[in-house]
Image (cartoon, rainbow, N blue to C red):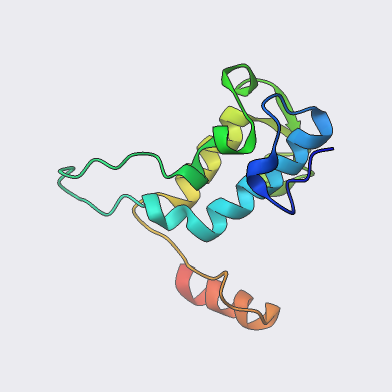
Length: 122
């Protein structure tokens, strides 16, 4: 049995529908915490970074055949009940690895977290 919550790297090489949903949730959470590692902070484009292992879909068991397969995401990321890995990847990259970022995962109080987000976004 797959256990993405306990250890993300335990995702099998060919996730089933249930394990793909689990791996997708862990994958999304990792982007929320570590996406800044690939933020686009080089305005001249002089530095080339390799894909960080924790931000690579393959780490979570996703392969070439999974990019266009629907995965149940329960409405997260504003993409509806399901989305393809390609859609999830695109949304995560745009949200957490772009030129502008908001770091809020360290805030434990939900009210403070909401206020910090409002203040940061404007």
